[in-house]
Image 1 (cartoon, one colour):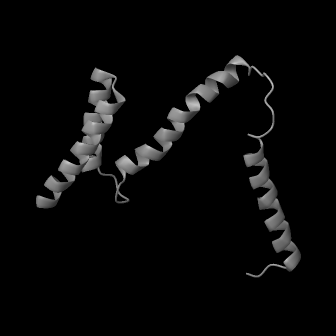
Image 2 (cartoon, rainbow, N blue to C red):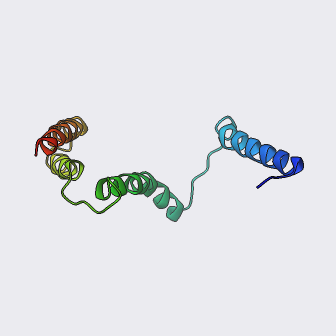
Image 3 (tube, helix red, strand yellow):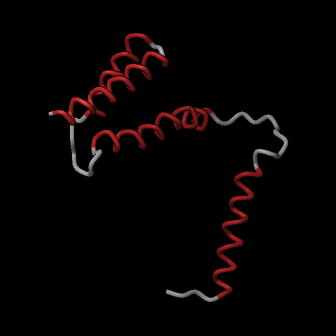
Length: 110
């Protein structure tokens, strides 16, 4: 499919303006703005929702099909238990990384 030169230039300018605006908003002097309570609550929940949206499909379907007994899933459950019991980010990361590496080695041997 070919596009006219005008269409290509409109796309280039549009993407450039979008990139400039999204990056340039951080350079604009801030004014004090308190969002409404509903918006503040939604913004507070946005990072966990985004993380879950990225992590859950990778854990449940690592090879494209549903796999509940994979090294990543077992390590995630272990890390979840450690996070729940210790509330330590370092311990959670350590247990998660060590367990996923060890379980991947064990699954290769089996």
